[in-house]
Image 1: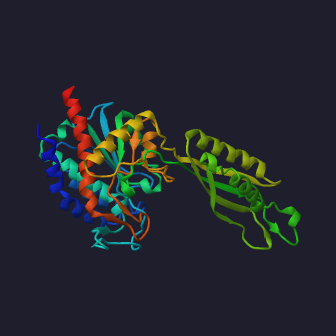
Image 2: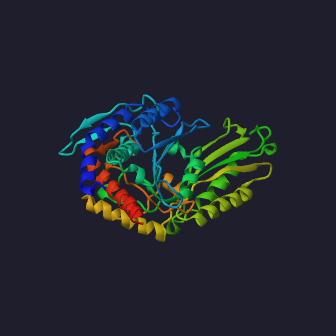
Image 3: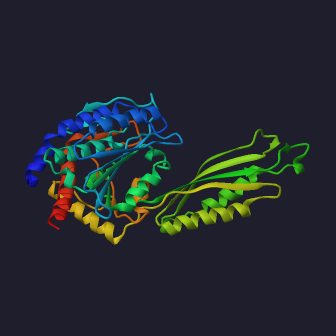
Length: 393
């Protein structure tokens, strides 16, 4: 079997190709709702990952989503597989933030462009490792499934069943989302919920027939007051009414009003309890002649830490340290990812393993090109340990 040192050399030799792959991916707009663009980016990935030892399965997107891509090796077996998770959609509509540039502010060489950090850089790192393993003729021995979904930035509703199915058969999950400062590894993410409150009442002239009307905005306001009071910082529960709309004119009793509500929580139980409390608040809020209905609920369950994910973190952290990276455990992350989805079915998952950078979801998005080599080496060391151990058994 080829030595680990030789494998590392093969990976490092691919770093310029990883950088080139990022540029190709970034130059295709893959805004989540730009289905043609998402699929064009996916086609680049299909071409890049046409690697001996990988079999591709395409799950066609529905409900306005692009296609989801899943690769597997012959060694992938239930209970042994490493599930590597990524996505190829981004948050920028066409024309808003385009192109790719390389610059060197200070002494740091970095690439800039939509999705370079979140998370096309991570996909390029994964490609470099798998291509190197294929050249060494040992990719077949690695029990691995790679997923790249097309709707992560809009909640992964379409891809979720496919990702959950993969997670149920895997031994662990590695999410190559944007790398954090100091190479800290994400072990916990808050859960996310989205609720839309829709109030309906009865329109009437505010001067001539006020008593005839039933004010939908009043009902919604009563609900908002109760909803916001559910925030409990000590428990990690937050409620944010982010948008409110309603009414037609100042002199008309409003017949319609609605609000969108963002929910964040640290545990599955708190998420379920929060939704239940909102439903109770909706019943109490309705003034005579009005009705308040809620849509939605928990969108991403929390990525909670377990004994198994703690062990996975320590295993991967050792690989990062050996590659010259930091390996601290990142504090609880407020936003969700597909790591939440995979961990919700009981899979131990760690996240934030992609290249370092900054500015995700902004026009300052950039990725540190010097971090590709050590990040790829860390993944290689982890996979090498896994398939070497399997071979020994």
